[in-house]
Each structure stands twice: as C-alpha cells, then as structure tokens.
Figure 1 (cartoon, one colour):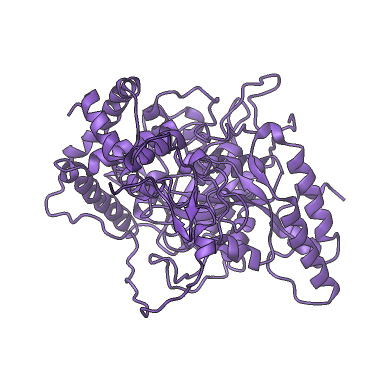
Figure 2: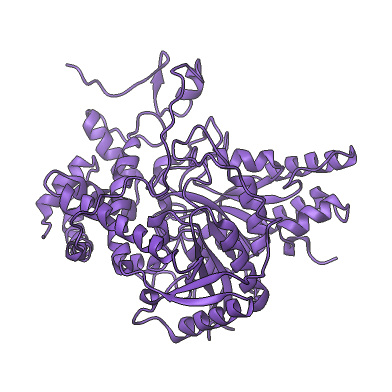
Length: 95
Length: 493
C-alpha cells in the first residue's frame, strides 16, 4: 500500500497538523518506508487469535460517583494560553 | 573521603544515617556537579533549591533523632516526563514549554515522600519518542562516554531517557527516574554503562506522567547498580487509585530480597534474539553472561520466542496509534503553546499550534498512528497488530513453562554517534531486543556487562515473569558481581 502526498495531507488534516506541500513531499516516502516495513505483520496467521486488550490481567475498578477534587478553577486555568472570566477562550466558532 | 558524587543511593542513604556526612553536603556536591556539566545538556531545568530543602529536612530529622525516610538525603534527577508541581514540565517539547503543572505525578510524589530531593528535570527524546535523545526541542543530550582517547565524536546517550542515563553515568546524580515504552530505560542504560529496570506494567502509577502509549508506558528507576535500582523502585511503585491500570498489589521489599544465589533458577536463552548483523562483541558478551549466570547456580535452557521478529513492526503500529490519540490533547486551549494568526479560526489554530509545537519525529508518529487507525485500515493494521501482540505475550507465557528468566543483549550495538542514524527506520531497529518485553508487559532490566573495543559500554538484559522484579534484580546482581564493571567516562565536560 503506497501513500501519496494527497493522502499525507489528508492524514495530517485528520491529525490537525498543518503541513506544507514540501512537508508532504518529504513525508510521503518516509511514511511509505515505515508502512512498507510494518506490512510484514500481514504474513502472521492470526486466525482465532483475540486482539490484546490488557497485557497484565487486571480488573477495572469503579469508584463512587462523587466529586473528589472540586473548586479548582484557578488551578485548572493557570496554564491556559488565554482565559477570560473564568473560562478557556478560543477564536469565535459561532457566526 | 572519596568524592560524594561518586556515591550511589545506598551509600548516600547509609552515610547520612550514620553521620559520615550531612545530606546538605551531598546535595551541594551534586548541585555543583550539575552546574558544571552544561556541555552534556542533560538537564532542561535545574532545581538546586529543591535538593537543598530535602537535604535540610533529612539533616534536621537526623538531628532530632527521628527515624530517617528510605531516601533521606538522596538527591535524584527527574525525567522531564513527570509532572512536578510548580516546576516546568515539557516532555522535551516546544508545545509544553513553560507549562508548570498544578499537580505532582504519583511517582515523583512518592519519591519526595520517601525523602528524596530533586536536582532538576532531565532532558529526553520529545514525548519519549526516540532512541538517541536527538528529538528533544531543548537540544541533544551528549553522552559523557567517548570512543577511546582523542576521539571527540559526540555520542548518543540512548533514548528516550537520555538525560537520565547521561547524568547518572557522569555522576551528576546517583539515580534518576526513567520511563520505558519500548526500551527507553534499558537501551540508554546499556549505552552509558548503568543499570535500569522497567517493572511489570502497572507497578508504577502512570498518573502525572505525560502519556505516549498508555498500554506500554511504564516508569522505572535508573542508577549505577542493582541495589540502588531496587531501593528506588520500592519508593516509586505502589497502587494508585488515580491510574486505572495500576496494580493493586503490595510492593515487595526488593532490596531486602536481593540475592545473587541463582541455584534452582532456570534461565532461558531465546534463539530468535540471535540476529544477523549483531556485532561479535555483543554475541561474546551474551555468552559471557550465560557463563556468569551458570556460575551463580542457574541452569541454562534454550527457548524459542517464535514471534520475536514481529514485535517491532507491531510496536510501530500500536505505539503511534496510542500516541496519536493521547497527543490529541495538545490543542492550544488548555495549556502549552498556542499559535493563532490574525483572522484564523479554531481549526486553523489547532493545526498551526500542533505544527509549531511538535517536532518532526512526533509528527511522523502521529501521522502513522492516525493513518493506521483511519477508516478502512484499522483492521489490517491496528487489529492485526493487537493480535500479533497476543501471540508475542503467549510466546513469553510458553517460555515460562521452561524457565524463570530470560537473558539477552539489551541493544544490537554500542552507542552510536549523534547524527549517524538519519533514517527513522534504522533508529527504530535499535529497540529490537527491548520491545518484546514491553509488548508483553513483563519486567526487564539492563545491567552493564563490559566494554567494546572502542571502550564503550555494552549491556545485558534480563527479562522476568510478570510481578517477578525480584528474580530480575537478583539475576542482575549475579551478573553485576561477576562483571565487576567499574569503567566510567573521563570527565571532559
């Protein structure tokens, strides 16, 4: 399976990473090289093999549905690139 | 008295306890060593005041006749992947530059509770993605080791825990934290002639550790000997309700349980780790390791791990897939970098922020991860990789019916020069011996075995059954006692 520059741009768009045409040109052969190598997995017979879900058997725990750490607005916002009136702010998304 | 910075964790702990020197003297000595080693670029942030405060607390406790904490007076390095409250935590990425967590990772919290102090935040490959510490936004870490006299080629300290390995080898700290997703503790330990253990998946809480590939990420200690690793791991490990994959098991007394007597233990030698192109010196060291373990009383058995060759390609699907999901959080909204040109909308802000904030290797892995998870490819890549992972884990389970431990080389070469491996794939192949144990979640450690012809360290890897860190540490100790590895880099920095 070969990845062309259009595919690289589409994947980059899905991943929300801006890339230039030159980046896409450079990345396409790099990704093809890696993906081509990965494809050897196809030769492994995995019929009747269940995909791994947990490497070490463990049970998922439940906890009581209660607030454990509340009222930390200042701390939550402390590292925000931009915040106003106690909220994260972003460019306008509603016209 | 010898130089304080030559002492390891146990020697510092005991010396402070017995009043041979004060914790403050120790912290000052290491702070000075750190301050004088900028040429190695091992630290992103230095925190001498943190180390001094912990030292003063230890000295005060001793003066008051209190029982000292297990790491009282021991200053350590903290890989900059662990969130440290109020101290910049970057994962060596521009996208987190300036980020000062409002919380403390569980592992670092445990270490401070055990009395340790922090010398600083250690450099690493960006988001722990790399095997040479060349992907850090804050510059390469230079290994303190060099090839022979007169050769000044800068060498890789390994990765991703390259700041940790370089700092310990250069005596800038007696021990440090590392994290290991596919070999990031063991390979740098091997490259720099130190020890490091990746415990069983779930032993150390992942809470507050910047996530790379959550089903693989596991914290562990790096130090100059096995005992120091055991002491550190005891402080770092333990159940944490904040991590859903944390093991709810008591932490064994690994240090007290150390024994180099391997009588009754069977050590497997996996045939598939004998690979074409492995340098003869590494093969010879492996044979030497077998002889050392026999000498310690172990029985050696040949075993087979038939899916070994598929571990790396499976890893390079699973790890990037998880990374592409985990790193979606860096969006320029809640923390870290924001790139927003005049007139850009929200989607453009995300894309510009991530383009500016992530390094090339991180982008490469996010793109691979996004691709293998995308509609139409998911089953062929991701599901197949997870099935292969099941087979790899099954290989280990089958091996445990014949043996208690496995012995292999840690890495397929000694440290290479910075800039010598430009092809991403060639770099990935460096983790060929370490990735299988990561995929299976089992404990594994690297201990130094000897030097190659150029005078560079080579490591041996011991892999154990789930939860059997003790067995791994004990075999490591048996090798350490017989290898008598005392080589150290000459201080050129």
